[in-house]
Length: 608
Image (tube, rainbow, N blue to C red; front, side, top):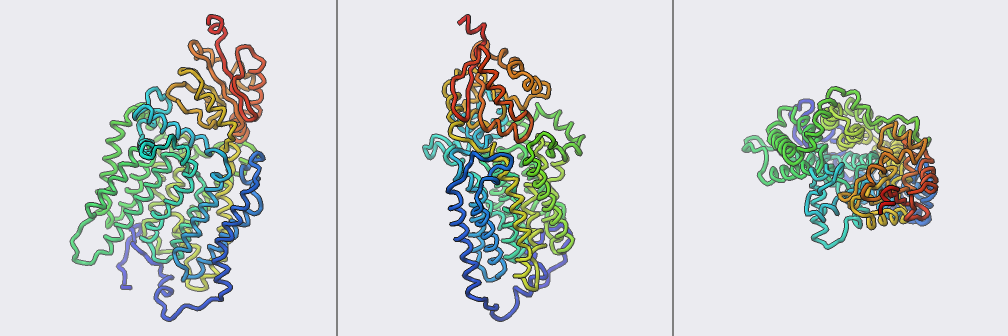
């Protein structure tokens, strides 16, 4: 390999092979032979881990989940399988002759164990927001596009790209609903991320140990859970793909031989980049801002600007045009809030760090582990920046810092700190991989020395990803209750729930006003706790002059109240008891996990 020209700090350094790896890559002579027993043991770990994982799912008591969700009901065999998979991956990583197919197989197995476990265990779709997005797709198909009377959900009409795409899939395939394949969104989304992640990392280094180590660490630390059936998961996949195309083009531009005609982009590739940005802009409100911030960060080094400035200009133009036209109602209504948030950067940063005093004891533990894992990721990335000088000549540090301007500018409903972590993670993990796995001496010893750290990362992810499953999991009885409500209630009827954890209650959301009690202000919640009937009156009396109101209580709602503490854990039981003894409230559906009450205004009932 020829001598490289000096690179400025922060400049993208295509295929910047670490200095310490070059002797390995160019050393003459055949590599040392390892014992056959070691080789077979390393390769056998993968299939054995998969078999143990599948066996561990045979008898899992989902009803026993409380504070720590799936963590407390998964059998020992599950943890043995996961540990064995980590050891097998490290064994493959310690031998530089291991082919890429083995690394890919280990990563796919990790994705299966982490993200397919709920899909295999649960009888219904996981997570209330996933059900909500299925309902939006259904409503857009019924209405031929935007949904009238959507109220709070009209934001989806202004960023409809994800929903229109799924509507096209349903209409092309003849499927009745996205519910069937939405169950598999987490494992599929994570599997699709592998390709752009590899393209990004191969634009930086040729060391397969660093590349696959980074991919593994990404899936070991991505605890935020934005991979379900949602516009954010779709837009994030496109964002990572966009970054992969940009870094690949930067590499190609830097490696162009002297005297070659300067051309920043081949027309076809530039068109593909603009198309991806257009889909991002029409699919999600936050991701375009993260996209622009990343493009600005990567454009700071002068040498990158010829490639990136045309893309940055196109991205800014697309975002401004969309926000000024299709998304104008939302932007206009919230402009004052956006401007006000700019004046409170400290509040925006800490908004997601909710107070833990009212949360369940297990949730306090989960929250601190999530925070610790996130802090550890940034700390290890910072150490890598200091210890591995070659990483400073890449765009990785800039991509890690790129979400910070968006973080200080807006709280995004208290979720911005988690989204900033999500968008910084793909770049941060390659820095961490360089810190952990880059070595000239005894690479096998180095790899196995970090096994405890890799296991700790996975443990932290599982607390964040599985720790709230008692509220994210829905039984078939809960689904039956909400299907009864959405199928039988007259249009215009008010539907009341304690929390958002009700599977499918948004079906026909354009026909029913909704009230979610845990979102009300503190005075309303205190009144509800003091007297459930008095707490309900302001909502149901004013909304039942024409049609009755329906109050839905279910197991998952009680679980969410217990986990996050916004309402006392016994609120649902007390509401059930109070309504059962109050005239006007009629139980119209009940099973072991849910009950539905109908309330008809007494004056209206008598006049009828």
